[in-house]
Image 1: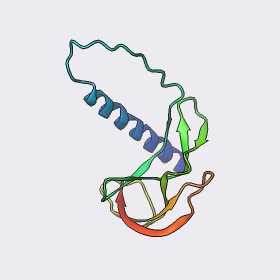
Image 2: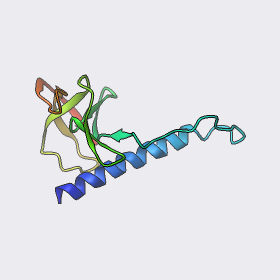
Image 3: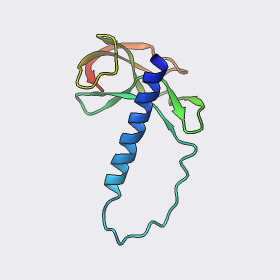
Image 4: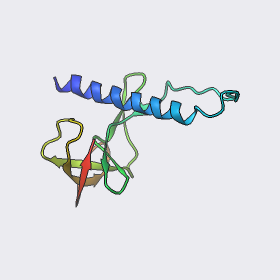
Length: 117
């Protein structure tokens, strides 16, 4: 059950990135795209949003296009834990204990901030 939820969240994040990218690229329809992009090496990770317009990685690993998992950048802020426990519901406010990614884990730095999906 948790795996299905995780896959659903990843798919939703991926879809939102595609939608936002399409909106940004919807400028002049007469423009021609001079570059082609290869997304096969893309890796995505779910995030929670904070009131200072930043994001916190939910997990310090990313699921890649080809199905493998990679550890994300060590400098990325992450969620150590949430109160109430994270259930991936939209429009729910959480209190996130913040940390920084460290070799695929998220040790707390003691900071707590309001956050949401």
